Image (cartoon, rainbow over all chains, first blue to last red; front, side):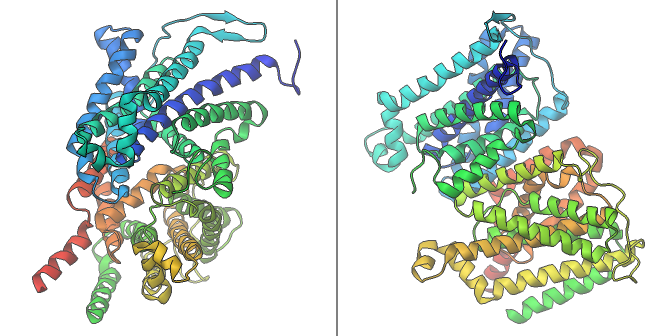
Length: 293
Length: 308
């Protein structure tokens, strides 16, 4: 087989696939953050914890109730979203009239509580989650595990579906209108507070869905969310939160770049996204797809 | 009012001078280091309105530098602290140049991401000792004659460092420069239209805050003879936000009070280490929901109401 600058193609494509999968999670998480931020003006710091909860709920459903992966894929996001909506109703709602920073601080505190409780209950070493579709395809240049292919395809469908719903449907137009001018939308008889709750639930559900999808790839671990969310913040800063499609494209691209870095210069693989963020901020402070306010 | 503030400071200083007679000096040194850290952080959030979620990079970065130069190059503690402070200031200049290009929530996310980058750097680079950190940093004599192997002697050195840092912050806030910062916090477009180069003021405040946070971290490394990944991790950035929030953002003494409260709490909860995260999170939620002015802020409000 051919070699590319001394790198066997299996390693290259393997890392690219892993990068694509990471990118899928970046996309789904930054998409949820952007949707929530658009309407609530809150950066949801609990997002990482909710992603982790998605993975844990899937694990509990499997090990305690015997509900397999495919059931968890539907149930876990609903359960975690319900939890999120309760938080929004009870706590977050009371902070909308204040500086946005308080929303950040509150959700940061909630993230600490959730992570702390899961660490106490499950330890921090991580639990395995069985791969629901083992095996894979032998392609001419690499071995493609079935589950990883499924994750890439499914997350693309979810991301594009979200984009379609927000940009092309009536419901989405309400959402976009409420993002622009909530008072006016309310005057037209639309229940904006309920819409806010549901939007938050939707964003949280996306995070939990990403968590369920991540469970068979990585171990289910209480710290999986907090490590990821900081990278996702950098992704959000790079892409800017103005555009839904922008979030998706940025997420997948950065995942791929990270995968490539792992092949060619592994020392920088954990910092490359932050370096790109710094460069983008120097050149285009509003982010690649953002609009200066 | 001016007179009263001086009185409070004098009383607190007197209290700190006699405190080691009653309280364990190492505990007091820890409180002072974190109090300085929180005061430095408060300079940004309280007086410029910038929430940095990455101050651990200055605290922890300086801790590594001072621990390294003292242990491996045999520098004396005062130069160790100076080196840590200088490196933190330089790091603050670089991080500040990048971060001040965004405001509000984005500023918080950018600083958090930059701090995570520094964390990974410290994890991978050689001189920091990876997971072990830099341990057993020797306690040399300060200025060649103050023996710091004695905790009580070292306490007064740390107290001096704190007083210097606190005085710098106090002077900054009450200087014309500090007034411009407050103007920027209240109404940035107006400050711009008045001809102030807002970005330069923000950057200078950021560097100052970073340098003082570094001073706190460098001192802390020498007190505990240890610099580790805990000092640069994002949890440390969260902790200083918590201290400042509990004590009262934008009050001169609030962060120090908050640091004392949180450090005391950690001391008493040492047996419930696994609950520390939960309790800290719960305090965040309670303070943000119920008393956003913090302890000192509420006290000032109560005092003003009584005298109104």
